[in-house]
Length: 116
Image (cartoon, rainbow, N blue to C red; front, side, top):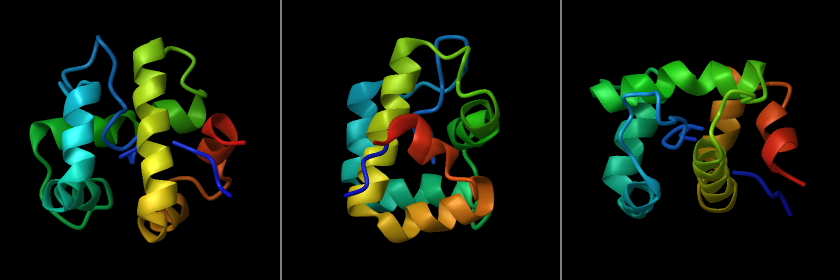
């Protein structure tokens, strides 16, 4: 089965590091992933389907770091948050992840980077 980890998304929800203004830590990410409404607010922001909060916009702005640079400048914590997000999306929100890939990652770089 697919093994990967945003919200991104993601790196949707988990894409920020200590230098970023994005405040979600591992615990808060779990809260976002557990709350379907909150998850969809972030997802819709990233997918240009809804308004972005400042954190959502920051998350969206960091997607290219994960896709273009392999997240070379990411902290270990940022990489771990990205893995958590992609795993969640692949296993629980696969349709959303496929939509995300079509928009941002048609070469499946995140699957390669975080998957098996």
